[in-house]
Length: 621
Image (cartoon, rainbow, N blue to C red; front, side, top):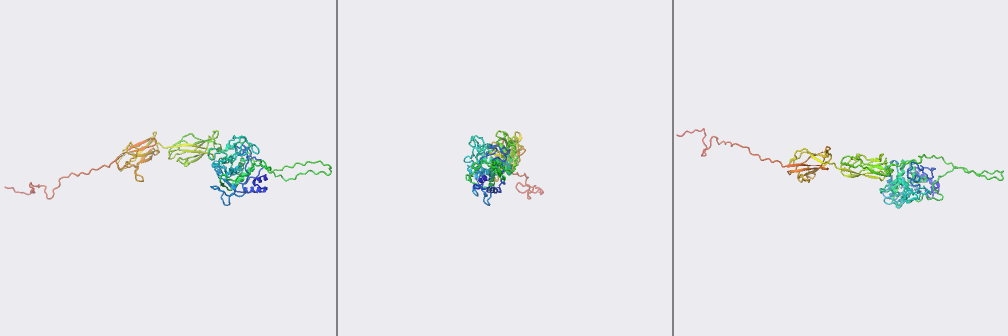
């Protein structure tokens, strides 16, 4: 085995010491851990055994994803991928630096990274690193034949393994009628991650959202591989789980060693190269030579012993009879401890995220009026391919950016888990101020399964508006009207939160804004405001304040309208100020006589003053 492995490690290397040095150097790197020690289980069986309960289902090849198909055995160079001082992060643009083996085609690398993010979202405890997918992709297909994929990530031509006819590999009769592999007699491994059809039927994904689960698409295949490796509750940060996951992919210890070597190599850094320019491996495990067995065989190290020699003939014997040498003793193997395994045939629990095949939207209508809570919750039912409910499925509900409706605490996205009936129920949704329809999107993280739920927010309505009070609304020009109170009702009940439009018009028959009637004051430009939007309070009432009469006397109408048909028309009267007549003079008596006049001495007829009454005249004789 050492010599055989040495030939695969480095063509031209003939010494087992060189191989050991190479493996030791890689094991000491910054990768996930040291390479596993050799075991005595080199017959091609998984370390967990065919039928092990932790082996993902669907692998027709005794539990492996690939049916133990051939793979590339080339190993990376011993030097670090990146130049000293270069950070081991992938650049944002395709460039080529360092050893060619460290370059991964841009689309292929993007698929690995997307698969890691998707699986970590749905199964964070698995701790899937994209470098593990890169290691498997390198060994299985040379990174999709050096990145020969189209813009959607589909290989330019199908990647097919040999027929699994039992000649050197598993015997798997056709399971897909040739749908994926074109072979109606035996199954073949398909695509850049080399899934056999029976495994793909269980684990296939639609990661690029084109509506198809295509094993020849690197996005679909990488995500399916990530979920397959995480099955059975594995934590790939634990070395034992990591080994078991890789061996479940191909049940060969040499395969495990090769994948781990590339995993560690990529863990030290890599870079992108343009699609179609990736480094192609050449040495495959099915290229058997006269000294290369079909399957890796266990290296044997016989215990030192002396080869027995036949008994020496007795010197007295003239014709000694030939003696048969005894059989050589069997080499002593070191004691091994058989791993603890679950009983063969133990059912495998497929994660709910993989079992769900469809999300059925709830049938309840999602409606609410503005600034209120929806009466019904958003729900979907997770079902499998047979229509049975699936419990324990994580479902994400997401609101569009156009709506101001919100989940509790102002959230626009919530994730819930389906119950025993498969129902995933979002928390209460509250409508905002916008009255419009919108769509809630439900999805399964890590899957392309989605469902849409239609929701509608309607305006609040009032079918009746009536003034409270009946005092006449009359003021003189330039005067202020008293506060007016109006009540809104819907079906006889008070209607809170209703938007009411108030417009000053010239008459009860007009809905047009008046040009010179009363107003609600002036805007920033100094123009009169004669249209105003108001809203009823919690008691269904609104107060109209600040209404000012114009400079033109006359009769006007305040027209109030509300959604739902509510209408009110209030008469506004503007009068001219009352005019005050001029003051009339007070009636007076005759003016008092002047000092030169005597009131008792009237003028004589001749015009001369009459004699004083006190003056006596003597009578004439």
